[in-house]
Image (tube, rainbow, N blue to C red; front, side, top):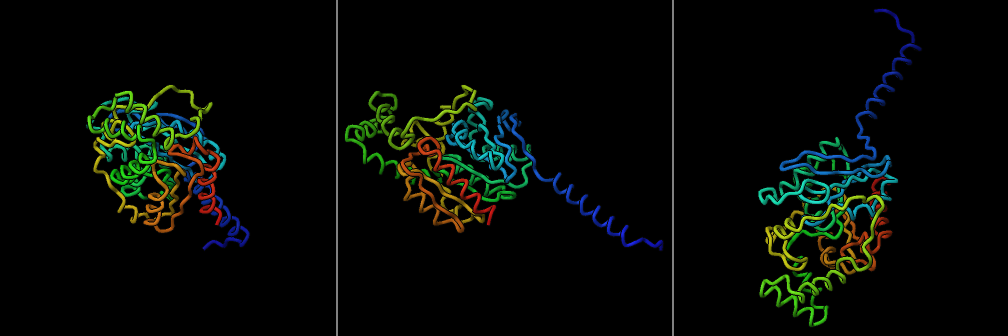
Length: 320
């Protein structure tokens, strides 16, 4: 065997370490601000990456169904620490519009998330959902848990029956005239009467977005939500469920979550604090935060506290 000096052995050893380190860095997901489209069954979904932070990315799932991601621009400050990935679910916003009911199945929404994750090459990430997006986050986690480091359930929906019960509780606090208008509209299935529409506005002002809905200079699109999808899957209003999700219930599945979780709700949220606290009790290693003065639109009614709740939770995981 040819003799090799100790100096050469050391040099070779450190060279191998450097090569391995660089290879490891190369394999790590590096996301830069960008936007684009990903092909899914039925069309294309639009996504955008905000921020240049180097910490673990966060993938955000908007509400609806049939809503858009535009409220997530209010979380742009999280981009100082990590990439913030937003996208519009198929049928709404900047994604391909459709009214194809064969596509409006929960499992198809799950596959949209998986297609985006695969396209972006995400190896490790946090999952954040708001409203209907929390149900989607849970469904996605149950099928594709790999790579998900933690989940944030913001104003969660996991059960139509519990959502309806919470809505009834909140409606009972409104003036008698408003309660009567809602009762009459639901009895007659007349959701277009002036009285019913006014009652819906009163409910939303109290428990939806209580303050002025915030806008962002980052949002340069006029793309809107899809009312057809909302009505088909949910119903005519937040408190009247009549669509395909009428029997939806995934509460027991919360017990299957094995990663850290944060439950957030507004003080006056449609997702009532008492109910969200119950959801949180079912998930080991989870936390609960109530956003003061906020309705369902926590990122609009108290943006700073909503951002702090998310940031503090993620910092607690990354800087132990």
